[in-house]
Structures are given as C-alpha cells and as structure tokens.
Amino acid sequence: MSTIEERKFKIGDPILEVNNISLSFGGVNAITDTSFNVLEHEVRAIIGPNGAGKSSMLNCINGIYKPQKGSIAFKGDTLSKITPNIIAQMGISRTFQNLALFKRMSAIDNILVGRKLHSKANFLDVALQLPKARREEKVNLKKCEEIVEFLEIEKIKDTPVGKLPYGLQKRVELGRALATEASLLLLDEPMAGMNVEEKREMCRFILEVNEEYGTTMVLIEHDMGVVMDISDRVVVLDYGKIIGDGPPEEVRTNQNVIDAYLGVSHGE
Amino acid sequence: MSTAISTYSKSDYINFIVLMVLGFLVIPMTVNSDYWFTSILIPWLCLALATIGQQVIMGYTGQLALGAAGFMAAGAFACFNLILRVDGLPFFGALIISGLIAAAIGIVFGLPSLRIRGIYLMVATLASQFFIIWVIDKFGWFKNYDSSGIITAQDIVIFGRPYTTPVDMYLVILVVVTVMTILAINMARGSTGRNWMAVRDMDVAAESMGVSLLKTKLQAFAISSFFCGVAGALFAFTYLKSLEPVAFDIKLSFKILFMCILGGLGTINGAFIGAGFILLFPVLLNYLGNNVFHGAIDATIISAMEQVVFGVLMIVFMIYEPLGMARLWENTKQRLFKKKNK
Image 1 (cartoon, rainbow over the protein chains, first blue to last red):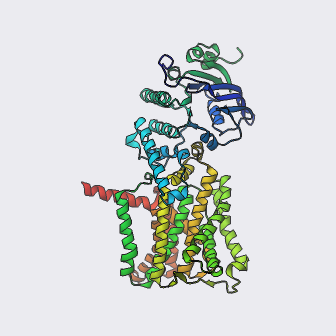
Image 2: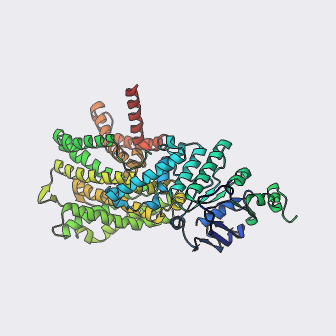
Image 3: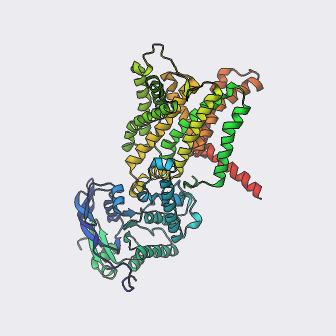
C-alpha cells in the first residue's frame, strides 16, 4: 500500500547494515553468517518459523546479545561491544516479544521512561525541583500525552500496566518506544496474540508513525497478511540463515520460503 | 503505584500545610511530656528518615540491600568526628558532610549490585553492616581514643544557641526530616524515581530505553546511604545522646527493613507509617499489660508477644498486601471518600 502512494519520506540509503553475523549459544547456532540491510524510512519485516533466530537478530542489533562473528553498522558507525543503553543513545529503540513493561508503574510513567534520553536534569535538579527539571518534565509530559492520544489510550494512562489487558500493554510498549523519538524502531512481534481488530489498529499506528515521522521500522511478525500489507521489504530467516530477501510479492512466491513454512525438510 | 509525575495537586499542598502546622505548632504546644518527645517522636522521625533511605534502594530501585544501620553508624561517627575536629563547622554542615561520607561508602558497597541480585545481593550488602562497625571498633581514632567505649555526643549548637531540651531537639529533627522528605518525594515522583522503578520492574527494558543500570543503581545506593547517614547522626545526637557501635547492630538494620516492608515498599509515607507502627506497637503492648491486665501478664511474655506479632504481620503483609500499610491507608481513604460522595 505504501509503494503506490506518494510518501513524505522517500526510502533512502541503508541506515542499518548487518554484515555476516553469527551467534551461537553453547553449541547451538542461533544465527549463521547472516547479512541484510535496512533502508532509511522503510518498513522492514523479518519473518520465519519459530526458532529461526528472529528475536536473536533484534537482540544483536539492540546490544543485548553480542554476535561472535560479523558486524552491525548503524548510520555508518559500527556497533560492537556496546550496551543497550548506548545503542539507545544512538537512536535505536525497541519493543519486546513477551512484553517488558514496568509493571507496577502507570501507563504514562512507562511512556515517560522512554523520554529518558531527552532528560538532562540530574537527581539534584529533580530533588530541588529547579526550573530546569520542571521545564523538562513539562515538555516530556506534553510529548507523552500526545503519544497517549495518538495511541488512543487516554482512559488507561494512570492505570498500572500490570493490570491492563494484553493488547493495551502492547500499545503502551509501542508508546514507550515512540517516546524515545528513535530513528530506528525494532518491533518484536507487535501484533502477537491480538485479534483482527487489534491487529488492524496496530498496523495503522505503525504505518502512521512511519509516514508522519519517517521512522524506520524493523518488525518481526507471523501474520503473513499483515506482513504483506505493511512492509516494504521482507527478510525470511530459517534455522538462522536467510532464505529470502526482497519485496513481499517476491518473497511470497519464493520456493524456499514456501518450503520452510510448509515444513518441507531441508536438502530436498 | 500512583502516577509519578512531579506536579502537585491542591490536596498535596493542603496535606502538607496540615502536617506542618501539626508538627511545628500543635505538637510542641500540646504535648508537654518529655517522654513523648524523647522516647517516641524523636526516634520515630530518625528511623522514618532511615526507612526512606531503605525505601529508595529497596522499594524504588528493587535492590535487596540490608545494612541500613551500618550506614547510620557511619553517619553518626562522621558527625561526631567532624564536630570534634573541625572548628566552627555548623551542625547542619556536619550533618550534610556526614551524609555525603555515608553516601561514598554506600557507592562502594553498592558495586556488587552490578553483578548479583536478589538474596545474594542481600548477603553481599550485609558485609557493609559488619565492616563499618568493625572499622569503627578497630581504629580508636574514630572514637577519639575513648577507653570506655561509649562516647557522649556533643550538644547540638546552631548559630551559638544550644538545642538540648527534648522539644528543641525535636524541632531540629523535624526541620531536617521535612526538608529531606520533600527532596525524597520530588525525586520519587520525578524522572529520577522513574528510572529507579524502571530498573526495579524490568532492567533489560530500562537499559534499552537508555537508562544506565550502573549509574542508576549506584545513584540509588548513594542517595539511600545519604539518608541513612543523616538519620544515624540525628539518632545518635538526639535519641541515644551517645555514640557506641553496638547501638547500630544488625538488629537495627532488620528493624528498618521491617519498617520498610510493613509500611509499604515503594512509598514515602509508608516509611513514616511503618516506623511509627514498629515503634509504637511495643509501647501499646506494655500499656495493655499494665493497665488492662494490671501486670497479670509477665513482662517477658509481652516482649515475646511483640516478636510473634511482628513475625505474623510480616507474613500476612507479604501474602495479602505486599504494598503494606500505606496501601491499606490509601484504600481506607478511598472508601471513606466514596461513601461521602454517595
């Protein structure tokens, strides 16, 4: 749907480059010699059967896992031996597969934590409520209220997120990632476990963010219908290797991909 | 639990004014027994302050640390030595520096938290408790080479005026506790507190949002120890009126831990409620023993009862209301308020 319409942010040069990375846990290879890139302002999907190494891939980009081989470059800078909080400072934010919200905090507080990188006031400024801290809090709060409004979660913004239904928690988590104003968002199964209606809304949010702010998205998704609808290009992983890479229409007709999804055994 | 945004509602200001009038005017004017000041109000405020310190590290940042009394001892002895050795250092100045010294020690003992968590961290932080007391005992310099082992604390002198009567000391403590409580509330409700709670609830996600675990944990340890240090100095100078390392033993650390849990983890008002309850409960039991049962129950049984009841309460709260008495209080208030509206 995005290719036909005129986009405000034209798809540009590669913003993220994954070069020949390999990751293993003990003797198990999660990712083997994998390379792909993500172009600026595009929506890039990673698909593949369970255990294909999709989440491990995001965890490598995000700095939670360190790949044993290969390199990842973001905006030309190689990401190596750095922690998730440095990656965050470089402008990459994410959501998690199994929800990693701050359960005892309210929805708006969760989203406000996403503003961390835009908060310069230190604990003394905050303790003494110096003008700097107050001003900053006001700006951050306004920004977060906008996100709350955008995601249509005004009613639950003061509820501790642990008490919210799953679909809303997913939305709050997206909100927290948006609050960082990162240029690259990694979304790990943003629509898992949702019904059709919820999925449609989530798709709308993702596309709107992409169109409105030009945010580059990398998302893992199982629902092929959704993937075909919203992504510009798709990477297909199976057993830690890339078996397909290209626009959705192309990937859909790729024989390797069809085999992987239908469970045809390897080497046939 | 409530939204941690550093904006204050009208009712917050009203509560504040009511509490201030109560604390600074009503209590000093109406309470005329020294017993209430020296045995209840003074230790209550001191221990509540230490409990806020425990709240910062345990309730807000989720780091299971045990050893608040060690940092109180550090603060107390630092204050004693500062007043003794630095001429013309005002009392409040000594108090702040004592807190800073405790904070520095807190950062060192907070380092293990970067590697270990949960019950193991508790064991590691327990080391601080024993180490600090050992150092003070071992090196005579800290006690000014006093052979008796118990040193009398200096009088509190502010702008040349000594504050030695119970009411005076109560007022000095109240000023310090008020200021520090406001600072704690500001931090807890602001971005600082949000970072603490993010680390507590889900550290991987916090890190992915740009929150540095190293910085946040050590900051919480430092602030927690600062509060404990100042509380310890006040405790020694106004309640104990002496300095002896044994007064800051592991039992006191546990007491503060209980105050923290019973009051409600992750609440500032819970620190006051918890401290008040644990201090007043034995008093109440004694009163019942003397005035209701007229001494029919042996004093030893009463003190044993105290332990039993605390133990049971801890278990009950852990199971049914992990958020403690502060939560019960909130719920009760809400219910009363709702009824009024009907």
